[in-house]
Image (cartoon, rainbow, N blue to C red; front, side, top):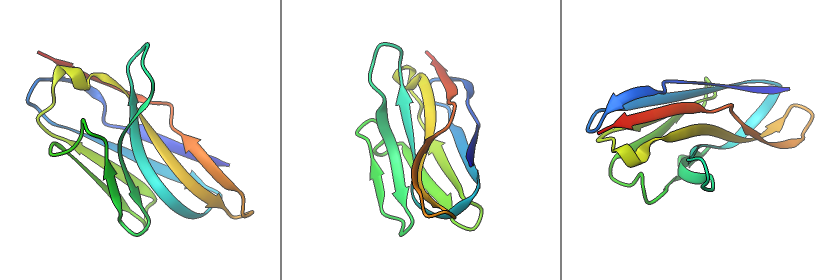
Length: 120
């Protein structure tokens, strides 16, 4: 079993910053990709940013230039620093981890989501 614990969401004003964190735990052999997605009700879930075990980073268009993703491989954590937040960044943010378990199963695991609200 694998668990993801997300933290850091909340209510901020436009222009402020937030830092999201996600920690993976459980029967993990290795983690390939860690990332953050977001979803607004009625819309599809979209990529915010992802980072591989070799630190290859991919940003969604909405995150480029404002957000920064990082990971700590020793702690199985991924962080998303969000700066210059805009009201349109308001969404539920989901942590996503693609990993291999100690039983050599490949899994794609989602967190429960954390709400980010940006007021104008």
